[in-house]
Amino acid sequence: MRARALTAPCLAALLGVALGVAAANDAPKRIKYVPPAGFAGHNWGDLRSGFERLPAQPLGVGAAWMNPVLTDQRITCIGICDANQVLLSLWEKHEGGGFYVLSEYAIDGQGFQYGNDDRVKFHPVVYQFCANWDSTKKVPPPDFDAINQFCGMKFIFQSETREQLAKLPADYETNYDRVLERLVARFGKPDGFLRRGKVVIETLEGDSTNSADRKFRVYRWCPAFDRRLHTACAASVGLSLDPATGIGTVLYSTPLLWEFAYAREHNFKGDRLFKMLHARK
Image (cartoon, rainbow, N blue to C red):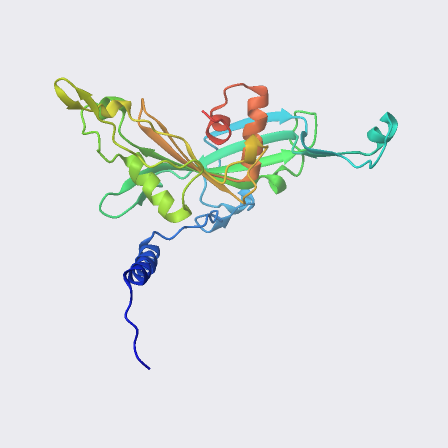
């Protein structure tokens, strides 16, 4: 059989396919979010009584109460229905409610490092436990130890402050940036992810930038959909930073911890945990 010469359009098409394949092979692999199963050999839901290394006294304890939250509502009446039929066919779903107690513990001196050459140190490392029961009385139930379960982890790190950033180049990589990079590598892109960019302002004296004006967003992996009561994942991950102090936080949070934060905001407006988990700003 006689070989046919490739015309210019055919050659261009083949090159396009080849380049497309090469580009696809070189594209970064998309990472599917897989929630952390727990920490240090303990799984979410493990009872506080099973953590032998933790001190007897907690760092702090918080409590809140709320009514069950209406999460779904449907009318099952079909066709022409009067008011009574509509009411009789009304179906509602409620979640949560009752008393919530959060207690936090830390092992003295425990911490760990994240990364290789550019390590970020996390200290303290805080273990969180949640208990929830249906009651209107401010008295813990007799079986409190049987419902006080592992519900979250809080990792604290130190990053650069606004004052320090004002003296550094605009493209300086902070500890916050390093932590975000490693979280993206492990869990994929968070909700509303934006790459850090460099802002250059042109003036008569030349180009200038202000590192102190950089924005540090709160990033969340698997947040509650449309500000619902809790995340739909076994655990979500959050990253936040206080630019004034440079204190950063990585938070692993189960649905029960989300509910506690929701109840706290219901009782005490401006709750910090609620703001990190739920608030849009």
